[in-house]
Image (cartoon, rainbow, N blue to C red; front, side, top):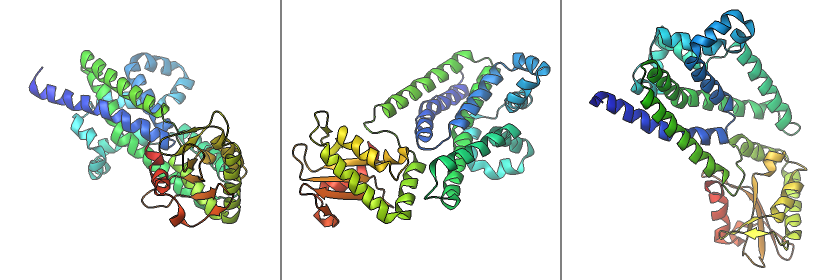
Length: 334
């Protein structure tokens, strides 16, 4: 293999090993599965483009369903993919592909919306809003989160999925089958490893939008939220002696107490929002203090309520053990 070709393949190999890690993480935190499925479908259509073009010529349904994917295949037959470095740095070249007509068309083919795509987007918009936001939250809270999801989806497509797709298309077009299979194998292995790590987390994965809704709903209904959280914590105390209760070394409490807390939290919070709350116990056996909390970040304090064994609520953070706030800020890093 020539040095230049070997260097190109090495760069693609590294990208195919690392990009799936970011993609799996992004799909867990943001609703971007549509973009992932769309680009994957585009790759499949390109690989089968000759056969599908024949079918599409005689089937209006196929043309409607796979119109954009077939246009992507036609585009790359007429305009072979550029060098890998171009796509790896694609977002940074925004001024160029905004100016150049061919580059602009390529970007729009990947991230643009067809008529069907707009219908799906609007349906998703309405479904997400009515299912997760009212009655406490409205469009004012929904639109920024929805816009952020669209922005993350665009970055995911242009920075991660596009280099993967164009690599597959280019290697297939040039007949570099062994290199193509090697890249696909590395990508599948990386995806599987990342997915397994995600599934083995002790906590359910709670999306960014869900955690933001918890904060917004809590601030909208401050008094009710405090009452519901305190009731949930007392319910957790009631289930503390259950045989299946587990406490990890960092004080995090799992099992029936957490399940009971989630049930009570459901009287205000949506089911996915309730899962954003965790329990912390001051000791693994016979705790003197129990805390219900959501994870905090550097720019935001955690939401928490604490109750002692005597049933009294503790509101002064100075009276909490040092390990409590450490657990609150590290919960999401597990």
